[in-house]
Length: 261
Image (cartoon, rainbow, N blue to C red; front, side, top):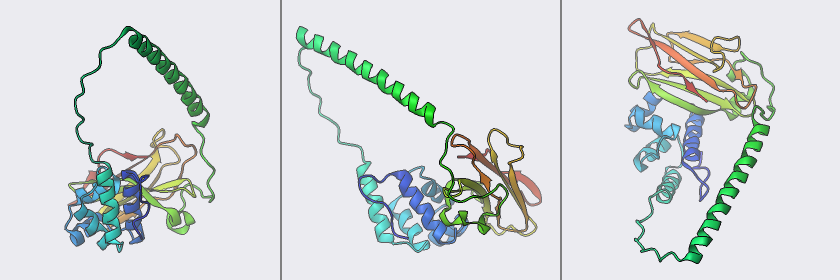
């Protein structure tokens, strides 16, 4: 994959999304595998893929090479973002001019106009929000809760929208999303050499009903990856959350607070 979108409209979020897509096209290597191949820590890799902060040039280069991307193009895009987001030089202190009566009156009128404009803008924004809330464009692919993502076309436009590293960097939990299906699924992966006899569990559910009928979950014995069935989002303001657990030396370990989109 190339470095994707560039130019003045690029953003840290789009840059991270591009890195996630690059990783997806490389058959979604785990953070542990990327750590071994790049020498970059799992925490730094997770921050790069989730857009928490702009990764260093070295990190971007290592990720691009490991995932078969154009390292030079990715480095150029990263440097442009870094230059654009650099803080501006400190402004010189300029002594304000004396405020005359006429200028004071003009300032009062300007402040009143600003307040009126703000109120009108806020009212329009509230109206638009009220109309749009709870609506979502219909999916272009019809799927049902419980479907296997790999057996549907949802995997064609799938991307990782959020994720985190848990259990001291040994386990990764992620939520993948398909715009075409308006559906999500969760994935837990580990690659620390302790999968023999261990179990992986992961679940995804509407935040409003964690134990409701739409909850999708799976438990895998002796594997390194566990992926839930699909969960279809029925409205735009519905939050979907995922949680997981693993066994360490035969002891179940919860993976902490849920991740949500």
